[in-house]
Image (cartoon, rainbow, N blue to C red; front, top):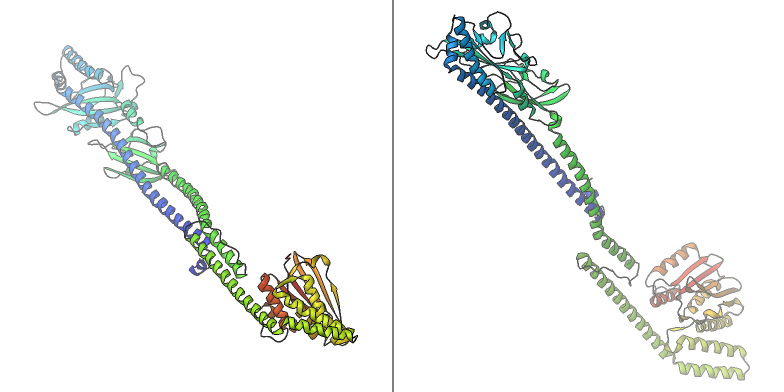
Length: 589
């Protein structure tokens, strides 16, 4: 939407647009920025928590492995064990006694450490001693893989997970199989010569790893498992994902990566054990990892929409509280333009709009005062002119003279002259009305009838008239001398120019709560162009300079000055048929 289009819209639209834009921009900025920061924070916290849990499990396992290594170390310090490791071909009784002593030492540690499933001591002469393990076949134990690995690297602790296929079985533990134990192996050196004289093997139950791994939860579906140096699984919860994670992915000592497995993204964390080549691996679905962030973003959108709705409603009411008084003020201004000066702005607030309303009221009051002042000046001017005219006429002198003429006409039996003088006397008397501007309608009708009597005597058979004014409305007050100029206009501009006799009808009615007087004639009428010109002239404020129809405009102006712009005269005419002039006055008793 262009700037020019917005500039032409209403204040309500602009305020709503600005408010909604500001609120929307703020919410989106805070929501997106805050969501991004929170997402980053959640990811970091989740990563940190996962690594911390994995490190805890790793430390616990390493502690157990160190303790097993200590057990082997303590055994290698036993004189009995060293003597057994040095033995080659002893007498049967002496060998049995020595083996029994070794077994007792092994049993001591087995009883102290319940996680130990068994201890096996094998010397370089293929002699062995164990309380819980025995050789399956007569094949030499010194040829076993675990034995050769320990001898090949005597300074290193060796771990063998799920030692299946070795020439050893567990005695008295039928429920404990090879894949349920972890073999820990270390070579034994002669403390005097430093030669490798044997190997000690400890089978450790995987229960201790299971307890540690199962005690840690990575979300709802994440898990931890242990992988050996050959990428085999030492221990893992039952999960099909374990065998889809390739050891080649886990490059370096530690790290994290994202891989698709079964069409789903997973975050994989890993870390290496010290000196063993083992790795602890943690796996979490990426969707679960980000679920908190997704839920937060959804909640943010919902809150943002609700906030926008509330902001729009509040903005609407706030905008209306500003715009409604302005609209009211604009409506009042239009009415003032139409001439209704009595209206006032009803605002009671003390803000800028209230101050504007007070200024409007003062302005209208001043306009009304100025109009009243002009009206009074014009009225006083008219009264002064009328008084000057009356002073020139010398009413008493005129009455006395007309009275003398009347008696002289009666003495000579000139009745037509008597009627003429009486009509002229009434005409002057009512026209003067002792200086009153307002008279009864009956007096106004008497005045115009006297004028018609004089005109009928002048034009003889050219003119007739009729009065149709009910008696019940003749008591209303009207501005004086409003009908006589209209009748005069009808005679001179209508009937006088018509061939034959013309008629004037004066009619009075109450219509639409107003007093309506009509002057109808059957004269020559007007053309449409002339009628349009007269109507336009009636709408002008002053037409006193016009010669044609001066009485018509004078009456119209006097009525409007007396009663306001809602009253006055209107005209209708048809060429060749006549003219109708309607006078609309208020009902004044």
